[in-house]
Image (cartoon, rainbow, N blue to C red; front, side, top):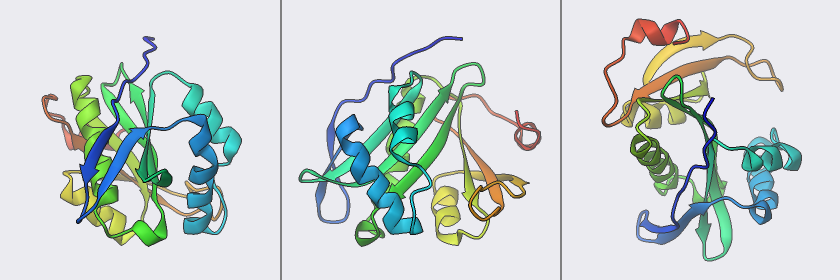
Length: 181
């Protein structure tokens, strides 16, 4: 399988009356990423070691959003070249920065980068009860797939598979998605 480093140039982006720096995550960003997880979930589903491993792998793009030098959000994506799919591994926005358009911009950025690499779809899992996240993903063109029962380790919650066609990608049939490609 082809291993590739995914490139992204730091960019200032406007989200609701403020500019933020979107850039590739680095090792020094990991403590802030773990802290964001703790703020959201009350614990860190992904610890320092998990993020270190992810950042060290080819075929991954982890972006962080900075307000000045403070990491306020991040999103990770795994590139599956054979399936022509970019899979969002995680996305998190610090609670005090939520509802400012940062999550939307992070997702759109990941979608744009994956399109530049000529991937056809973007996929992700979301907790079935996370209505706000599902609304965001639907607005971005994601469609519902199958439910993965007892998917999450912490509470055995269910996840909903979702997929979106990327710009320039070929058409896909929802039935293909429901069977796991």
